[in-house]
Length: 95
Image 1 (cartoon, rainbow, N blue to C red):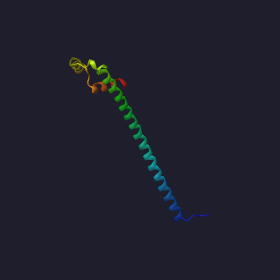
Image 2 (cartoon, rainbow, N blue to C red):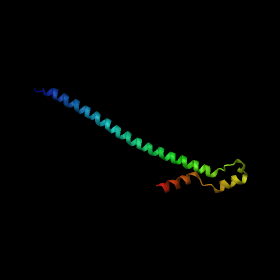
Image 3 (cartoon, one colour):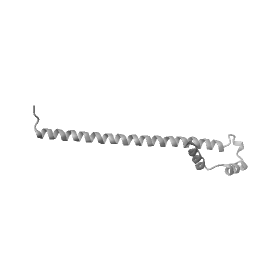
């Protein structure tokens, strides 16, 4: 059974439109996967930074409040390393 040319053209247009919509959806899926991977990496880095911060804080803070004297505080200020430097060193050793 022969299909009229006008119907054939309409079917081709419809198929082409559906394929374009499929390609757009596939492109969006790939973009979302890339964004998800980037965000996962960012969360991992933030988690590592948070752990490093807690380690840094625990290193600086004495466990016993009776140790909090003015001399101890000045010693901590003198001996402490800025957190940004600690993070940078951690990142360099990891990478």
